[in-house]
Length: 161
Image (cartoon, rainbow, N blue to C red; front, side, top):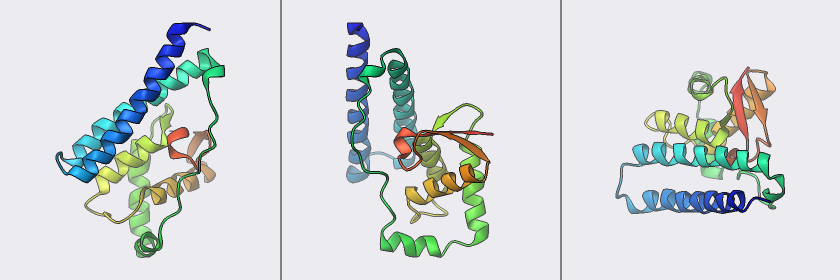
């Protein structure tokens, strides 16, 4: 196997870890405007995941299928907030999710994050998992096409039909 591909794989994984840590620090520190920072970090994470996907196409033996838990279910408090949504509000969320989808595959986490940022003032207490559930529903309704396991936002992609 090409050593440059192995080194690239390792650097991409280190970059993802660093961006995940940076995201957590932005939330806890309050030193930066979360919306702008998450847009930048989310785009960077999506690009790194796309690059890593290409590495796996070249060297599939590098892909480690880690045992990871699927995205967590909403908490009781989040369930209460979700139950307050009207059909019109759910439709609004769906419309925004679809607006961030494309005819090219995009990471579900990127689409969810972008939609949440756009709607953060309207629906501040609605968790990312609800947005992910809405994407799963739109896939089952034939509005979107998916690749990967949709129970893992970071490892699945969607595109418009």
